[in-house]
Each structure stands twice: as structure tokens, then as C-alpha cells.
Length: 241
Image: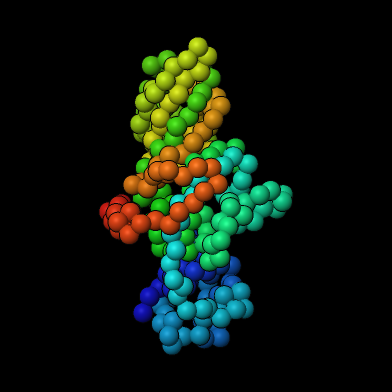
């Protein structure tokens, strides 16, 4: 017996957080009764579970992809504005997977996709503090004091950002290349941090999430995670909780 939202996530409905939202919205029925609380334990082999009127399918085979997201793509399955989705890049791959978190429209780099709801939950939950590394080219030359602000925390939307790691990689006449590692994932956080110190980001590439790296991928290309990569990733996530 397992909690309903966990069974739904394992069946590939969505991330565990999204499954909880579906339960709270009254979209889930168990044995003919609508369920709106998260604590119910079920046996998917015995209990009849309906999600939005459809029978819960058997657990799907799990897939784990790493994609080099180019600029000009949204990190969602569909887009209400009709923009290109990262799913459009998965040519030749026909299984259902979902982006893990988001990488904004103008940014590029590493994006994980999977149908493993438990792993998605672990990678995106704030408690996990999973490191994500970005290479950012900014305007001008940030002073040591401004870089210290990025490292120690700046106020965004009424709350300080968590401590980060910042390294200067290259300085040219008018620009600076920074490596920034975050341990949280707020919306457009790196761009907002750079704007706050007065050095807006010109180009932003995510190069690493936890132990996963782009390796030889070029924009628009993807690969499946290797067994050792996946085992280490799951251990890192488990250790974070």
C-alpha cells in the first residue's frame, strides 16, 4: 500500500506535486468516491483509481533524458502562445516524458526530462537544494562587492536568495563571463540576480544539474542518461531529504 499521489506519480500521471494538485481539485476517484486528501493509501492492483475520469494505467517504464535546450523554446509540454516546445526536439523518441523544472525561453543548456514523478519531485522540491550550474555572460565588470552579493544573497520578491557559488571565468573590454551555482530554483533567478547588481545577463547556459552534464551535446540534441549517472543522481536526491 502506498500514498495515492505516489501511486499516481509512478504511473506517469505527472510529478507528485502536480498529482497532489489534482487530488485537491477533486479530479481523482478511488473505488467510486472522490478523494481530496493526500494521506489515503491505495493498492493499484486492487483499488479502482480514476484521474479526470480515466482509469489509472499500470506503471510506465521510466525514461530519463538530458537535452541541450536551445534559446527560443519553452520548457513545457505545450504553450498557450503557440511557441516551440522542448518536446518538439525529441525526434525519434516517442515515449511520454516531462521537463524537470524550467529553463526560461531566452536561456539555453541542460534540461532533464523524465516520466519518473518521484525523481522529478526530489529534483524540484526546495528542500532538496540540488545544485545547478550556469555560465553567464554579463554586461560590464561586476566589482568584488557585487559578486559577494550574488554569493551571500540578494532580496528577490521579499526573500533573500540562498548562498551561491560565483566564479569569474573571463573578462573582456565590455563583458564578463561568470560561473554561478545555485542551490534553489526560483523563476528566472540568475537573470534577476544579475539585473539586481546592475549587470544584466546577455547569454545564459545551464551546464550542470547535480552530477549530470551536457558533455558533447549541441543545441537541440538529447541523450538518455547512463546507468551510473542515474544511480548517482538518485543517491544525491535521496541524500537531500
